[in-house]
Image (cartoon, rainbow over all chains, first blue to last red; front, side):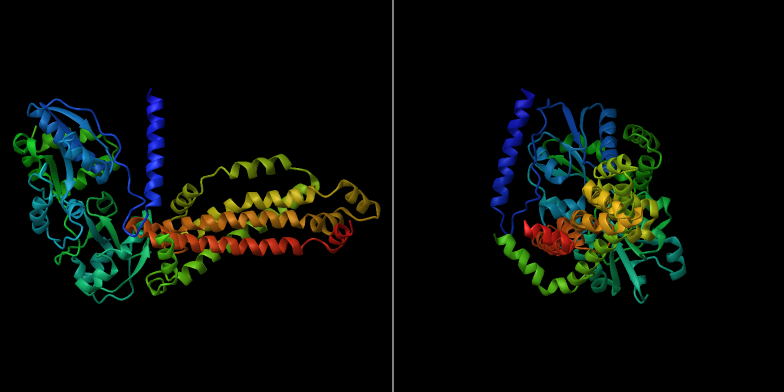
Length: 304
Length: 227
């Protein structure tokens, strides 16, 4: 039966793909992924915690899950669901009730036209932008967002602490994924907001290595990337809000807010930017499981 | 069909002239990667192939090698070599990957061309007193040229398509637009760049088709026409 169902799904998927392709217009998006079937029904006394297919997100989700368990909830884990397009429907119909999210990127998902960039503005707009069936709890000071980084040596020799300090340095090259060139915070944004003129070099998956090797001077790296710590990089401050702030924020079903807020809000408050990087380091450098990392972190912070 | 129109418009728009990688530079770097990789591969594979075809020695190794090398995933190879060589040698790492990709078809073309020469003709050449190297140089190589060019042709086509992957590691080649376009969901740009690659591939193939005809020795062609 399984095989037959699978085949049917495949055929249906192929047919849908064909239809999508033939309907291709200026606005349609041939790369849009199917959301796929969602999980089974759950009893109302259990909380389903989900996570993105991103190791850092999974650690945070595991922390939520263990904190909830410590408070007496029965928790069902539904981790590594995928990206936003994949898990949002499951959240909206209540199959997943808690998932760690990031304010800026989430706001952009609900409101692509948004101009807010500061953490407060983004959070305020986000609270209004989420659908009625969902709610965001308190945001955490921990962020995982785009950032510009330089090597510690370069920062020291040029006296750099903020992006604006780059202004006036000649011959700078900024490295990042190919799409950075077209992003609002890319080379154009650097020039408009901070008066920093840079050449652009696509460095793909080796951005950090390129920065360390010196083929680029400034690199676009996620702020919670462990290599900022392990490779001794300096993240430049962004006082003008070039980057969209993206703090860790729990996205939960509106019907469970009352139950889980008391447990998860203290977790969010205790999770600092440095703390998040540290969790990631434990995963990528020390190869520890998210269960162990989460358990240790909760114990250290007196939350379990 | 809208998307095709947009893709064509993208190719000829002024936007593609500016930016960190103008279209002309992308085409130039794409072709440079292709030509250099195929040339290096030819310098290695052609003499080796001739030797294998002439002596018959190492044939199994050559056949096995060219078969196995076709199974190597090129994307993984590019990224692996970039990490092994270090990011300061991205061009060398990418070129090496493309050279490895181009060697099997050229090697196969070189040895099968020599091997396919009729034994009677080789025996005849020996009978009139040619030395072994004269047989290779004056009989086997010229008669095997069409197959060799065929090998170069398929190697070039494979490489011109695969150079697209260089866009994943740096700002060069037409693949850059595709990698960037996927992330910013600019489908006109993706398709436009893909179309330019197709045009390059077709033009290169045409060149080789002409070359393949041109290298048939005069005597052989006369013989064919006479039949």
